[in-house]
Length: 386
Image 1 (cartoon, helix red, strand yellow):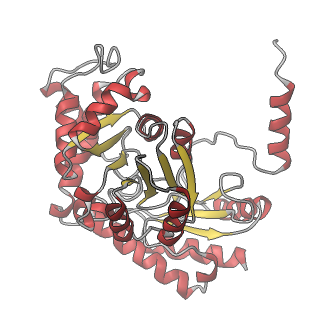
Image 2: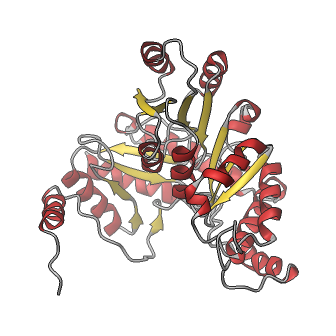
């Protein structure tokens, strides 16, 4: 057998010594407080059946796309899906990507140019950071959700210049569950003629009419340079989309490497995206709205945090993500194991994914969680954390 590089083996050993070693888990029947399937659409039988009907209706009984979209892979379901998504999100254009990671590394490596500036929230997702690293622009981080710190840093760094400035944040942060003052960011970027980009991965399907997201809920979609939406969270399928102007989409098609140099999503994947967006469009019309159930569960979870006197441990959030700070990889894994042994799936988030000392238990809430399940998991947490 070929010898494994010693440097890499040493890094694996260090990760194990830090009790931060990652391993692939297996599926389980535990009560779900871990997945991003906020509306339960990933296992929705109607979406599954509707996907097949869409494929049959359009004669797209193919297993694969056969090539990139610029070669042979731009099958007709793409134009249907992108128009549907653009209309739903009140955007001029939409461009589908194979994943949220592809969308973020593609956008941030292609759009900001040499001589431009990027200012990003210090807690943005790893995929955004990776895209920024691939960019030729100069990048600076600002304090989490802090417009004043952004303004201060920008004024110190940007003097009179013809450079473009891109400001990056998320509407709901995946590891904290909190949100910035989006209106304040929009007002600031408009005043300075900067370009605001917002990742809405964890807001779509959770906030706004029919789950359109926080940006649309605030009526700000026409005042933002670009929005990035992923389909693997509340939509329960796979892929992502960048929303923006026609010129933005034209540029990405011509210069975005993660879009150009990859095989397109299969017809089945695109049909599933169409079916999932159809489900979002019908959310408010259903007798028992999944979105309403989710919002009620979020409110109940927040109430129970206070009843069990756990608020000192939790980061403030009104989203589907609630994080309980438990410092130290050993301690947070220990409590997570105890909760999982009681039949509830709650995941520990370890350093270096989050800063050392800010390790946490991440609770993801869903429309299908019962009030009893929510009460029980917080009672377990209160027992083990105290």
